[in-house]
Image (cartoon, rainbow, N blue to C red; front, side, top):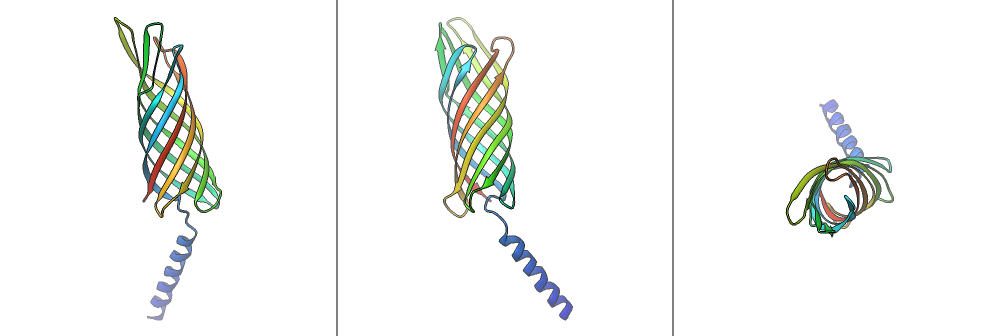
Length: 182
């Protein structure tokens, strides 16, 4: 009986010690964000607001953080030149996040990932749409404001690669979001 009691106490203490070292940033999270994007597509300046959702998983190792994230965004970014209007409709992607805990509530991080976005060009007589692939790099900061709720800000650069009618383009995108950590 003493063996079981000692084993139970040892297990409880080990779980308490393991939990005490966990970071608020460890585990699954999901959230929503507002975006502003500005860039160039097929020689047309495109800018505007949008929004979306994101979710992922992260883990800390000491003060270092590593995680993965999925995102989906809609956009109202558009631009017009020479009778041609270009609109960005939506994008979705996957990214790795790596960073450093500045303290127990603030994380500074970098982002590297892949995105796919739908763009549409139209003039008075024709409309063409294409999905482009892009490489995304960015920097961000996230801070807890409640026990399970964090706010984040992020600046990204996306290098869009197209073919046919769209060619190559780029986008600078600022995100502001709120996340719930499960």
